[in-house]
Length: 549
Image (cartoon, rainbow, N blue to C red; front, side, top):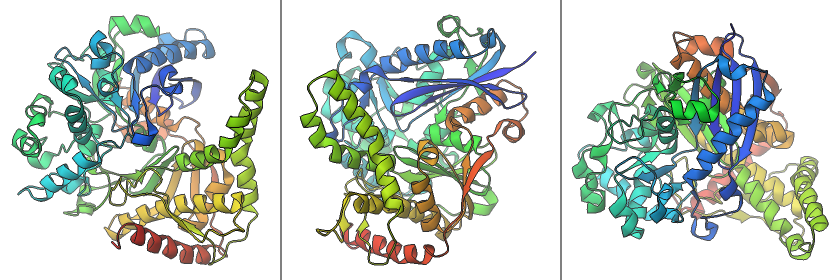
């Protein structure tokens, strides 16, 4: 009898479900559903860097995407599922009450953004992140040593403290906070109550300062010294974290019925999308996996003996077992990649929205124009020559994630003239994102982490040959593109297979289920030297904007 696993990938805008044959690695069916409230722009304020998602969006979309998947799969496919696992964006935590219920799912807080999941790209906690960084760097034990040395406003404790300071009612009602990947996993198992809640290694290690060196999380005293509002929060967290290859529990009767799945199948520990994507990309030492979407996440792994005592500076953490058991997982990334292109598209489309806002036919015309806008810009930009005198831009439109997290920095550009047209400007933006990615790779290499090849996954890797070729030229290395359209969900399905006992270990599962490469981009030897010059200009502009650092 065939055996299947289910990978659920919660992205920024939608959730995707992927059904995979455990024994052949064949992707059998997939389905995608957008979050309804998020699609309406509810609970968000971009001007304030506030991005919140309602937990009901996650629940409703999960039911819809899985039940919709069965309409696309063969008859009886659901009965062959032996395990499921989740990946989510992160850090995306939510406040829960003493019963383990997200506050936004209670009547009192149902419309309160502070009671909802604080999405990864919410940067309202810049001040709190700076205070945590200062406290750690002044402490006898630097609890950020394995997190790049800088705490980010995108991460768990900064977001919790910011909400507590802004909303006393939420603070009073909060028992603790939980990451999306851990909460949705616990929801499936019926273990959301704080007494039963288990946490995965991925989120805790990379965003919550968990590390075996100090026996789990930093002590309560460390957080109280930052702000008494954090008193007791860490003591309610289970320090016995586990890798994604293990089962967090089994599917409850309630959720088996809702999802039309067999009760009791294995539910693996959850992880962040980029980490699961790296699993699907067959990540190994020397291979950098880049998930290229609205932002980027860069994942590689290393043996502990290779890293030694090195704490890689300015990244998003190095954690034993966060990607693959037996390896140190290292994470970096950019706060905006596709988001930068979308910003430019929206900027150009603004006058059209003002003029074509009368009837449905005109709205459809506007939609059609917007869908072709970046395609047209890419074709035009690809035909432009590259020279050392080209304009230069930074990719920090949503702050800087790595190297050296700083969400206060802003985008800048130089060389803008009257003759600069839209394709020229778009070309500079694409190059800026490629330069930002190169800075990450160079930081890894400078700190002794070998990067021999790059594998990319995510929407942009399939949608834009221009972007991918530019990256190959700027990085001056070959780039492999994965075949799978749902690499993060595939990684979750691989981990589900291991958690369900279909494979003894993750490497064995990858050998059968990981995605093959479908395309390779090679650097243009004539352009690479020119991009070396432009990259130095990018670095100089960044140093100027960053105060000469």
